[in-house]
Length: 108
Image 1 (cartoon, rainbow, N blue to C red):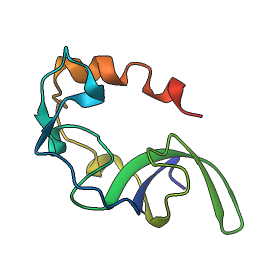
Image 2 (tube, rainbow, N blue to C red; image 1 turned 90 degrees about the vertical axis):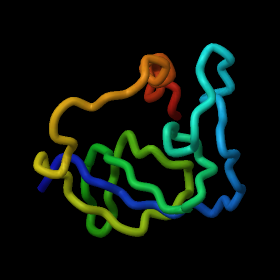
Image 3 (cartoon, rainbow, N blue to C red; image 1 turned 45 degrees about the vertical axis):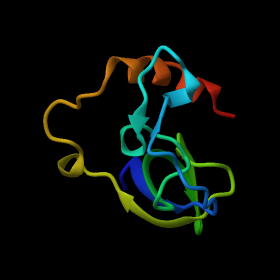
Image 4 (cartoon, one colour; image 1 turned 60 degrees about the vertical axis):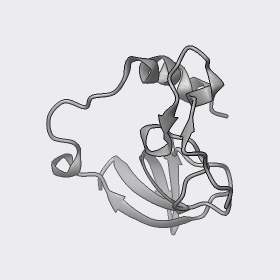
């Protein structure tokens, strides 16, 4: 079994997102489109994230680092395979590193 899985989720929120927004409302960062940030109010209610599998008990899957709002239904899971991860360097803007620096430590 893979030690990671991809989870596909469905958000119940249906707010529209602005064409451009400043990530985390930080005035030091540029306004970017919704597809350049990880805001929860997206035009499509489907989500995909990679998380760590902690354990399996019967039909229950226990995971860590699932990037979803508590209570969000998981509609599908797939194993993570190296061949499906990005090939080559992942490029991202400098502000995103600052935004994500303590992201997982803030999670409950």
